[in-house]
Amino acid sequence: MHAQEADRSSAAELSELVISIGQRLLAAQANTAISVILEILHDLREFFGVDHTCLRYTDHTIRASLMVAESPVRDIVPDPDPMACVYFEGADEVFAQTEHSVVPFAVRPGDGSAKRYQEQVREVARLAWGEEAVAALTGASVLATPLVVGPRPVGFVSLTKFGDMVFTADELEAMNAIASMLTQLKSRIEAEESLIYSTLHDDLTNLSNRRALIGHLEERLQAGPGTVAFFLDVDRLKTINDFLGHDAGDRFIRVIAKRLKDHSEPRDMIARLGGDEFIVVPAQAMSFEIASKQAERLRRLVSARVSIGAEPVSRTVSIGVTVAEPGDTASDILRRADQAMLAAKAAGGNEVAMFTDEMRKLHALRDDVEFHLGSAIQNDALTLHYQPEVDLRSGRILGVEALVRWQHPSRGLLLPESFVGTAESANLAGALNRWVVRRAAEQWVLWRDAGIIDDDFGMRVNVSPVQLVSVNFVDDVATIVHDVGIDPKALCIEITEHVLVQDLDRARVTLEALKHLGLQTAIDDFGTGYSSFTHLKQLEVDQLKIDKSFIQKLGRSPDDLAIVTSIVDLAESFDMSVVAEGVETQIGLETLLSVGCTRAQGRLLAPPTPAEEVTRVLEKRVIGPSPS
Image (cartoon, rainbow, N blue to C red; front, side, top):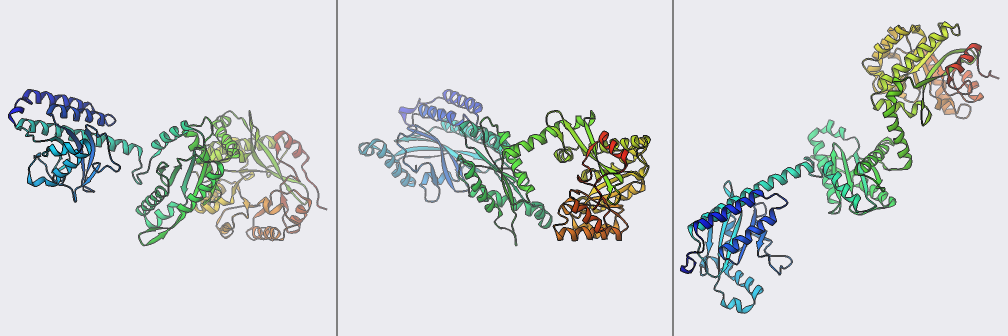
């Protein structure tokens, strides 16, 4: 140390400096770290009487030194700033040494090993203070104290003096302590940032997650109208997982994520909700029409082929789109985009669906049903209408089909298609089916006890596909038959054909169990799923009900006539009876008789009506127009 600097800093003052800096660094958080570091660099500059201090971090991946903060902050910073990122390859002697040095090192004017560094110092001085200052400048002194983690440096804090300066051992020790505390701050902030990052990003793709998406949407909604959300759901990803393995499925998802990111604007929000679901929120506000075109572009982008190892793979995508409305929350937008996506899925996939007012009404109804159907079942707020099944030759009523209705307090009379699907998705199908079977059986007993019907009069009940394959279904029916006292052979359980096609083994077991109870069974909507034709021989079925779509065009459609004729012949060959549904025209009735189908139901004969009205019809024993 020079004699004139002998009392520059005492041990007590150095200790006080280190303690003060330590207290501030300990209190610093990720969002306050830079301002605290700037204060500390300023204090170091003042305390040591140097001209410049800075903190830099080392990025060993790209082999570069990155500026974190400096004091004083330069008034004139060129663009690009050559000091912002200094690559070690080709760097001057001081920067080159910081890449690997784990101990402090100093450079003084006249050091032959730092000529390039001194030349650069003179150039900085010339830019800052002019040629005269450079002429008087002999060089610079610098102390670089590394920030060390494990075996290698992760940065350094430097003190630079224009002119000659020597640092004492106590000062070096103090700077080592300060560098160590700066290292701890760096590690702590990186851990905090890593934790924050992990809470806001998807592990598999590094895209934003739902939490980050919600925050982004809330900010966007504050900014003004025109926010658009695209909900993407990859179609049939399970096929890749099943055929190539889950690792292949993960690789596929990562490729799609990168593709979405690479083809978006920097400020666009791309998020993965999990599984095969992505959300895209463009930074640019969009109209309904522009959003529709953008959705088509996204659909083509995702559907392009992906190479997974040696396998070229492609999947289509279903996309739902919604445009923000006044008063929307982030949850509102995501819910509507999801609903639109489900509509695209329901259309067969590989489609774009824009959220519409019709969807809004439909989902409002579904929400209403889900919230209130359970209590409607418990409180007996449902009702049954009955549609007669008629012998077309004589008009004699052979039985009735029980059809559930809901007299909704605000929506009026709801037909099954308005609430049965929601009942299945809301786990209410079991309760609904038990209610229908029990009330239908009770009505049959009332009619029998009143002498209105005979024991062979049929009561048909169509059960939910979800309930049919449930483990308790047969036991529930057996309990109802026992409790109510209906003749088992009078009760016919109708099963929609697509259930047989989807789960033949379970359906076979259920049908056999129902037959064991003495019940009748029928396949409803027969002819809409042709694959069940080949399985009839294996099934315990008493009756086929021809779907109304084939009946309504009889007399005009040769194709439908051929199908109906085939079904009648098929039923006869398996010793099954056959019933035509949806008879609405006289020519349809006569055509059915001509091909040997003698049992039918439909509005031409009698519409579904409440029990009291059907009772009056049953008392007459016959119904419907006679064939001409």
